[in-house]
Amino acid sequence: MRHLMSPLDLSVEELDKLLDLANDIEKNPDKYAHACDGKKLATCFYEPSTRTRLSFEAAMLNLGGSVLGFASADSSSASKGESVSDTIRVISCYADICAIRHPKEGAALVASQKSLIPVINAGDGGHQHPTQTLTDLLTIRTLKGRLSDITIGLCGDLKFGRTVHSLINALIRYKNVKFVLISPEELRVPDYIREDVLRANNVEFEEVERLEDAMSKLDVLYMTRVQKERFFNEEDYVRLKDYYVLTKEKMQLAKEDMLVLHPLPRVNEISVEVDDDPRAAYFKQAQYGVYVRMALILTLLGLAE
Image (cartoon, rainbow, N blue to C red):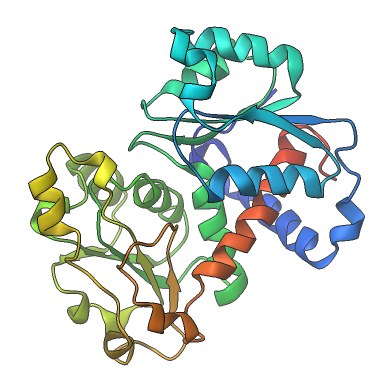
């Protein structure tokens, strides 16, 4: 039995196979419409979510399975003090596979150690968000045709953004990937990512403060939200929340085939006028999230061909 805690739980070969399966699901949805008949997915969300929870549910329903679970800690026995370990032991009696989101780093790992069914980490604090990373990789590979030989700009909250940390960890395994890290001083990528991941693997990167200085060299621009829920005080959040806003004018500095990605939800870091630009791929990205989660469910349940 396998779990998914981090994108690194999959080898590059397994990852490519998973993305191939997701592409096949996109092209041939009918072929997979009953692949999970009789199977149940439990969604245990201790933290609010729209896309991740609903895309997991859509993925399982598209496969012919059913879904049960809770959308907040308040609506579960966690509000009575039940531990994650006990919750997952109970869930294992009801479902065949579980997706868990929790505000504490490592909570999904604890669940996986006690679980009798495959567990998928659907986000744990500021740590990892592996299915978002799989979504990002599928989007880039499908729309650019490759995951190697790209320059990717990561913009916004690079300190607390778990999507960014997961994506860096995943992309360094591909050849000739360069990173441009765009953030204010206070939200720079953590030292352990800079030293233990980028420098330790001899990955080319540069850190800049102005988005305009990076635009012309990027194949992919990955925008992120400055996350109010990760800040310790309101003043810091208010000061930094509007630091980067992607506008039509800034898009004029970019390559004609640059992709704009965003894990969503967006607040105001991408102007709505950019939505009509053919390079804006963030809503397609949300759709790819369903295909990749379908592929992941099939793989972890041992139902992939």
